[in-house]
Each structure stands twice: as structure tokens, then as C-alpha cells.
Amino acid sequence: MDIYDQVFENNKKWVESKKAEKADFFEHLAKSQSPDFLYIGCADSRVPANEIMGLEPGDVFVHRNVANLVIGTDLNVQSVIDYAVNHLHVKHIVVCGHYGCGGVGAAMQPQDLGLLNGWLREVRDVYRLHADELDAIGDEKDRYNRLVELNVREQCINVIKTAAVQRAYLKDKSAQVHGWVYDLHNGLLKDLKIPFEAVLRDIQRIYNLG
Ligand code: CO
Image (cartoon, rainbow, N blue to C red; front, top):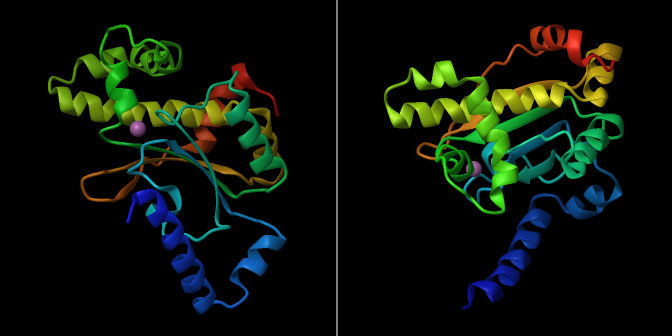
């Protein structure tokens, strides 16, 4: 069977399996959503948000783009964050990068990337911010991996810069921000343990919107 047709066969089987587990699975979900997580990840086909977290439909509000970027003028990601925090009242906001990220790898090459120049300049800015640390890493793969981690950290800081997240946190300490990296080679998630409160305190001198 053609892969396109296969998808509809798969869908029917999936519907049946979900109903077998819980007869009112779809009726229940159709009523509303109240996910605990907002997940901002890379568009890479190998990093499916719900699946790697072992969570079901309804559990995760998802936004994905090339290299998991959170850009202040990107109405798309900013709207997602605003809705997730102010309307869905998510408890956790995760920025999840992944080792072997093509977007981060491309940004490491000092060359014209066409349309992607504008988008991936954000990752090049992350490199420039951390150039001393990155340039001191001799091994190219280690440097690549570290840039993936630092990019996640900077995107978490971009999340913390938003008024929605600052206000939610100051109000009742809801909406914690977390930075994760997914390893394509073993499927494991690593929590970078970004000190959310300390980062917020640190940047509020400049970015206070609370
Ligand atoms: Co990627």
C-alpha cells in the first residue's frame, strides 16, 4: 500500500485501539483541553513531542519550528506562549532541543543559507554570546553538542522574557520553564536544570515586565 493511503488505514486502527482502551476517549477529549505542558521543540521528524514524553493526546500543547527558537517578533510562538499561559494555565513550559539538530549545525557554518539566514541568525547570535566557551572546545562534535544546549538555554531565557510568563510566575509561581535536550542516538531526554528563578531574577533588571 502507498504510504499516503497507509496513513488512513493507520488512523482507523488507532481510533479502534483508543476506543478499546477507553470507550469515550474521543468524546471526553472533544469537550476541552487542559494540558499541563507547553512543549516548544524542533520541527525535526525524529523528535515527536508526545511520544518521547510518553504522554497522550490532551496532555501537551505543542509548538515546533526549525531549531526550537523563541523569537520576540515571531507572532506564532508568542501567541502560543500567551495562550498556553493565560488561557490553558500550563504548569510547565519546556524548550526541547536535540543533539544532531540540522538547524544548529547549519548555523555553525559561516555561509549563506538563503531564506534560513534570517531564522538561523538567532542561533549564530547564541554562538556569539557564548563564543569564548564554544571556541575553547577543541572537538567539533562536542562544540556542536554544546551549542545545542546553549541554544536551548537562550530560548528558555527568551520564554522568561515574556510578560505572560513573568506575570504568571510572580502571581502564583505557576508556569515553570525547563530546558531539555533529546538524544537521537538513545532516545533519552536530558534536563539541563536551568535555574528558572535565578535567571528570572537576573534578567528582571533589564527585562522586567511583571
Ligand atoms: Co533540529
